[in-house]
Length: 381
Image 1 (cartoon, one colour):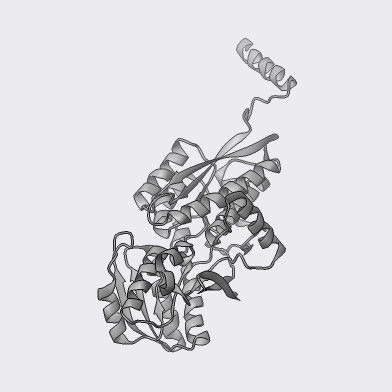
Image 2: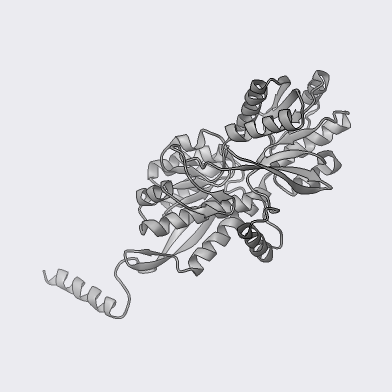
């Protein structure tokens, strides 16, 4: 009893000088998993920048109140190198060592699918800014995303090719070792055929990170004489594929998904990517005041305009932090419930989740013109 009384007395004395016995530091960790090195490093840089910006704004606004204590965020970023096994190790480290209250990431569906089961088992909410493969959120009820999914994105480009460009035949070249391009390829094919179009060639390769010669597949595609070429791959592979296609005389219109969204697409592909179109989540040319304010602030901070990766990471972090603030708790289940019932409005649109924690959102179509991304149109779900 004397010992208990002494503890109570110490707490009372500490409280009297304005320091509580609970949440002494008023700081909790939030994790991020992004490809900071490797073939998709520009994705990681943009994504990290978006999260850092959201965290800084959250802290500057006072953070959240948890058990009566003002609590701010310390952001811990991990490099997944674009590799599932590295992403899984990063998730283990963030959860077991850094004791994060949530994870923002990963970018690639294959990495998120490796990390998500770890977060789910630990009861730590995870929200991917850009993993569009439909299987991602099916891992469990702690897994969210800030982007639309492959079935919608594949349908968007199939509709654009068939109805807007008026093409009736198409060919597909995709990485069959990666969940993201595989899902886009399957959904484009399904949607294009449902519209009445014909897929005249459906070619695959293995591992975009190591493949540099696409001529065998492109030779088969050229022989099939398609009117449209769909390349649902990341920017590095898509740029090389278009260069080799143009060198072979395969000069039909080409398109892809949000994996094209990098300045490196033009840097690598040059004139070969000119006229290409791709589906995306955000356009810096959107005239809304919220978007233009974000673009100005991001550009001033990082020296370049934000891409969709930056905008979605900013939104993913902002949505998570808003849920944390509303929950007033570091408990994973409380934050998860607040995320599921969010009314958050982000840079890439308003968020409302379906039963599988997928947001119901619009897409935009972007065209490469004179080496620059040009907004064409918005497509609603």
